[in-house]
Image (cartoon, rainbow, N blue to C red; front, side, top):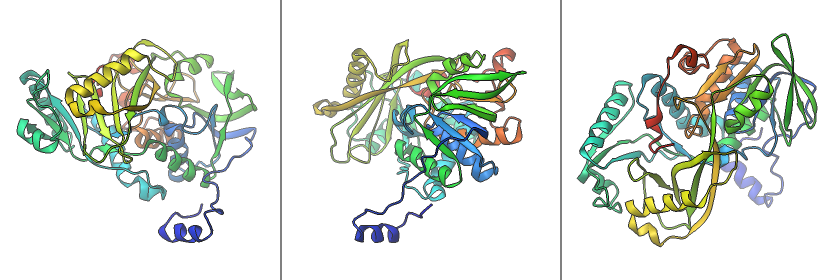
Length: 414
């Protein structure tokens, strides 16, 4: 793998940028691998990278029915934060945020991580008390948080309308949170994994499984049968459908979550803002676009698009908070397919099928979990036992009743 640096950029510039090597290989799949990962999104690629680089398992294939990063990894609002309430979730997402902070250097690829902070607004004294409890829980979990009053928020985000329909009385901020370029994260992991010997096979759709004695022996694909010793499903909203083909039932519901961006403008918004009452979250990208998200569609769907009423509601919510944004034109809109578990927490690790692992249930927090999700699932596969951070998120919690209800941490209702 060629190192990216100022010197290599200058050298290739003198040659007209005609000799850059491919960022990753496009191999023909072998007939058998130690580990077969289905899904070349952020979680699948991160799992493959950590298997190869931390745990010495390099005979790995990542199978993708479309193109690399074409699913939810390229269809999100790129927020990175660890402001969760319960200790189990806080520890996991804090691990992920710490990995994000050094990921550009670790992978020699600029993921454009920008720790601009994440501000959660309070629109009444009752909500302020709830957010105060949330911020205090973060502090007890060793995660940075700061309570803000109305004047603090006015100084922090002057363009906010503090006297909107639901007046803003305060809030709290996690200063280390921020955003990262979503496609760059997928590309960075793909490049590093490929350089470590991982085969990333695009256009390879898994159509079925071959099982024997409670184990998966192979996956059937449009490029032939591919055998393996261990298998992992990292396919987000399609997890329940694919797992059913292997004989495994997952407690997952799939819904479309929309987002949109406006035309680019000069820098005016220097943090990520979320409002559970007004029902939206908004930030400004490195290109100047205003990135807008809100509530999910109110019905189950596998479509990577949204419905107009949700788009309209998201736009109206942002105008309520920042009226000046009402003059902007929307450039594009998209949706990801979210996999939501009953307690709004992920389902990661081993399953009832001996050599089948899953990474699902990320809901609306899948992007921020990519580094930790890949690292801990790779550890689990390599050691054949749950990583300590994953023990609370095992599939059997729905039998024991030890749920981790993090529905409020989404910031808006999903």
